[in-house]
Image (cartoon, rainbow, N blue to C red; front, side, top):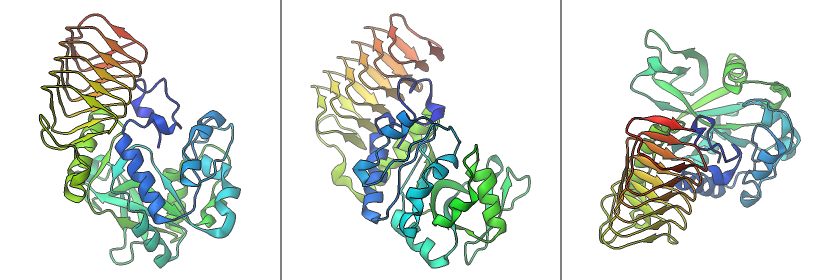
Length: 348
């Protein structure tokens, strides 16, 4: 679980390999639990420095962590972890950090065993395939024939969903140099008949941009409502789908929801209104503030009678003074906001 690079600068104070940098605690716990339930071995790999790899959540999942000092793009970390991943000859999962979905690890592992190829990728259907690179595969077997970037005529409406399982044989294709797994490794595997596609059932969202993260959060909460409604928060002032960490404190006369997640140690004071927002660990929302379509970062403090809306994003440890209006503000970490931001802009 990482802080997607497209989230920066709001995540600038967090390593891109840090598990705690995940902008969605629900997403991190969801894939971790699904991975644990699948009982499949693997390693957590993160591109970049040893510090980033050291921060990855491998030990908590029973996975070792490779180390290296080469920023080798998507495929490079697999080369760094070659010995770990090849040990035992078992398949391993590779995940993009900026997607949210049902994470069908067990089904993907079964599919991979059945076809016997080097790799399997999860694909999802989209309404406007011309905006994406699409995957063309055989309808019966799922064997991938080719990839087509932003097709002008319809060839497929399935795109790469960013979830993969590979047999160790793929490691022979990857050298320790900057390598794109999607643009270099996958086409070669498809040409050799070694890459297969499994269609995803249920919701999927690329959450690399803050506005898309909020949409993905809404999708996740709706899926939680359908499958595990007991995990959602209920009580006075709660509207629709709301997820609240047990350690969070919510004051009197608040209205929370719909589509809100509140992280560990958050304090929401009296009379606050929050809808379609994520409030991350340790933040405090002071009394009578109004938040809609916002992401409040770790350890932030939002003052009294503040209004924030239109995908306002606060980085870590941001202080917003009392009685201010923030409209689409994108605030870097460790800043103090002393005046209103009436139009969308980045606060550096």
